[in-house]
Amino acid sequence: MSGYKTYRISELIAGDQADIPVKVKGWVRNKRESKNVIFISLNDGSTIKNLQVVGDPQIFAEHLTRLINTGCSLAVSGNLQASQGQGQAVELQAEEIELLGEADPEMYPLQPKKHSLEFLREIAHLRPRSQTFGAVFRVRHALIYAVHTFFHERGFYNIHTPIITGSDAEGAGEMFRVTTLDPQRPPLTEQSEVDHSQDFFGRETNLTVSGQLEAEVAAQALGLVYTFGPTFRAENSNTSRHLAEFWMIEPEMAFYDLNDNMDLAEDFLKYLTSYALEHCQDDLAFLDKRNQEEENQKPQHLRQEMTLIERLQFVSDNKFERVTYTEAIEILRNSKPHKKKKFQFLIEGWGTDLQSEHERYLVEKHFKKPVILFDYPKEIKSFYMRMNEDGKTVAAMDVLFPGIGEVIGGSQREERLQQLKDRMKEMNVPEQELWWYLELRKFGTVPHSGFGLGFERLVQFVTGMTNIRDVIPFPRTPGNAEF
Ligand code: 4AD
Ligand code: MG
Image (tube, rainbow, N blue to C red):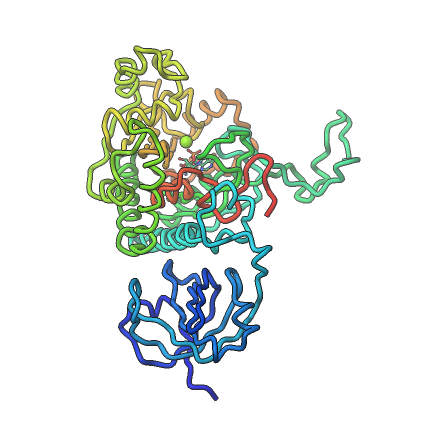
C-alpha cells in the first residue's frame, strides 16, 4: 500500500499544507524539460491554478517523459513541498507518474497558447479544458448555487415545471414542436390538417418557452416559489444574446405587487453579483484580465469605462434607476443619437418597442447604472400582465444591464378574471387551452407577481464574455447543434 492520499489541486494550491505525500490526477497543460528536470503544469479543473509537478527524468523512463504532452492525463504521486520557483506556493516532487491517457501532440488541438473563441466553439468537446472556459463554467456553477441559496434562505420553494407543454406562455409563437407522428405520412383530419388527436399526448405539444404559467399555479398554493429550468425559443435571432435553448429562473410570488417584484429582482441581482465577487475570486481575476486585454484591442471610444470587477462591484453597491416606459421614451427622443438619427431603429413615438440599442443608451450613456423600466404599453407586452388604471399600460418591468440589455423581464399578473379574458380575446390567446389558468382567477384569486432572469445573460454579465455561446457548455443556436 502506498501512503499517498488523493487530493484535488484546489485543496493543495493555497500552500497551507506542505511536506505531505499526495496523489493528484489531471490533465497536462504544459511541459518543460531539460536534461536534469522536467516541469509539468497539471490542472484537474478544481481551480484555474495549475499544480507544478517536478520530476527527475532519470527516474521516469524515457518513453514516459516523451509521452507526457499537453492534453494527456496523469496520476502523479509524490511529496508536496514548498516551491523553490516563482509563481506558486507549493509544487509536487513526483515519485510515481502513471500515464492514464495519451494525447498525440500532432493532433491535440488545444495547445498552450491563446486560441480564438470562434475556434474554441468548433471544439466544444475540448474547450472546457481551456483556462477561459474552465473559469466560465466554475462561475456558472457558483451562480447556480447562489440562485438556490438566495431563494431557499427567503422561504421560496423550487418547483419543476414541465418541459413539454400544450400552451404558449408568451404568446409569441416561437415554439419547437414535440411529436411522434410520422413526418412523412402523418394522420390527417377531414380538413386535411395534421391530426394531433392521434399524437403521443393526444394533442399538439411543444417545448416550453417559460415555466411561468405553471409557477403561478404553485404560487397560489405555496406562496413563494421559483423555477429554474431549460426553456426553448425558435426565434431566428443570430445575436450575441440569444440562444434557442437557455436556462431561466422564474420566481412567482403571491401577494406581491409590481414594486415588491422590482425590489426582489434588484436584491436578487445584487446578491448574485456579490456572491460571485466573494466566491469566485481566482476565476474572476483571470476573467478580469482577459476582459481588459480584449478591451485594449478596441478603439478608445468603444472601451468600457469600468473593468469587469468594477462593474460587478458597481451593480452590487448601487441602487438601480427605476423609470417608466413613458419617461424613457421622452429621454430617448431628446437624446443625441435620436436627434442625429444615429439609432438604427427610429423611436416613432409612444408605443414603439425598445430595441437593445435604446436600452443600452439608457443604461450605458444616460443613467450609467442598471435601469428598471416599468409600465409598458399593453400592445408590446404579454396577455397575462396586469392592466393599469390608465387602460393603456400594463404593470410590466424589464431590468436592463450594461453591455447586455434586458436580463430580467417580469410583471404583476392580471388576477381579475374578466380583465384577463378581455386581454386574451384582444390578443387571440385561446381560452379553452388555458381553462386551468383562468380557474385560478375563479377560486381564491390573489394579486401576484413574478419575473424571469435569463441565466446565460447573467453569466455573460458576471464573466464579461461578450457572446452568449461562450457561457453555456453546448450552445443551441440556429444551424448549430453539433455537440
Ligand atoms: O422577457 P421574457 O420573454 O419573459 C418571460 O418569459 C416571462 N414568462 C418571465 C416571467 O415573468 N416569469 O424572458 C425572460 C428573460 C429575458 O429577460 C432574457 O434575459 C431571457 O429570459 N431570454 C433569453 N436568454 C437567452 N436567449 C433567448 N432567446 C432569450 N429570450 C429571453
Ligand atoms: Mg422580455
